[in-house]
Image 1 (cartoon, one colour):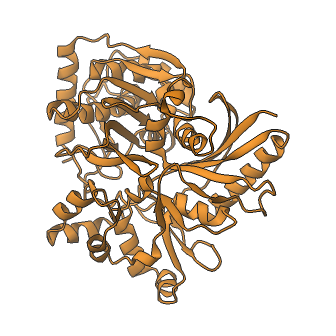
Image 2 (tube, rainbow, N blue to C red):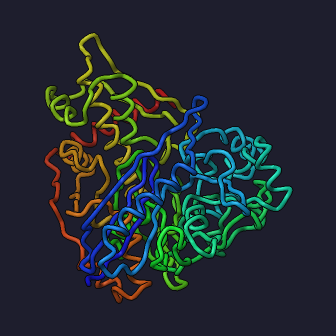
Image 3 (cartoon, one colour):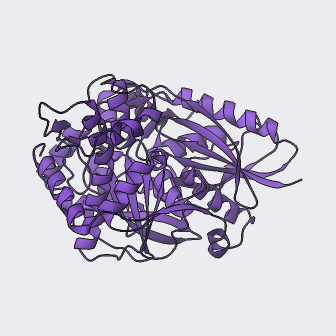
Length: 489
């Protein structure tokens, strides 16, 4: 029998379960989407019972298919910052999960800023005071949802990110735990003491007993519930999706960076075991292995692939993703049109949660081709804003930039990104880098691989993208983009 690992990738739009062999190759994948709920403008929710049922159905399908193999264990990567409330006794969710895109905590963040808490929160968490992160959504739900209030009063309340909810539902032990990367996205975790912070808990009105135990990313988290499988599979290796991609890209040395293009995008630059800070970027936990915490600088983009989805579904400018390239290549440029995708505010380096999306620079000649191209280019411009900030502050020299995620399949976008950055992009042959990172951690925990050097030899490079545009032209394009951004600020 060959040794294999199973991986759950629970993302914003759906759930995948993958199978990895001992050589680090993904040999099977199944997936299910879940419904998105938008009860009010700026509010985004998920039904976590639906998500859990999808996870279980996919796991059973894959375990049945690979029952003749030596399945070593199961790893998890997940959408970050999305917060789930559930009943300690039943394990069932209390209301819908509040998704990372959800802006309903913005007013709470504004109030805390007015009270002077922003700098305290930043110094302790490395994060901006923004409702993108979990804590303000927790505060809002505790104040507005009577069922959550009742569960809290009766000591039945559990609050956690998606990984913690899945661990609680999937483990035989009903393990109430999270990994350090997910804990660090809540605004309640102190990156200097590496634990839940009492002052932050008080600021947001959250009690420590409602929150999960914090563990290393390569920890053993329990055993898969026998109601799902009688194989007694250990769950080992849990990491937030963006950090998972950094680990899966083998960015283990200072200056290696990765860009994950998804619904939104996350840019992470590995910094090492010392904390690195920036004026406009986040200080993130990259991962923790065997008690040693590793750090990264991060820039967050709220809308990337979601911008193209909006152009497709809301504006009806194309019906299939395969049409995008023909549309963007049918014009030589956007002719001054820019899409500023501030549907949920603007993330790094602007951090303006009240900004709203706009299409600017249109003339009578502008048509859907210019708008679609501008929407695609907006993804690259936002990435360039962040990496330019790193270079401008002289923080870390970015040596190599790895790319992954759905939009990275678009060669026009990757060519344009390389032009704007004036540097080489590297795309690996393997996709699903977030869950690969979780599986690498699980494989280390379960003894399938012995060290990071072994992991570095597992990935193959598909191709590289070299800049073809003159530096001055790229600089001018970025300046024009920033002038357009000013119009929504």
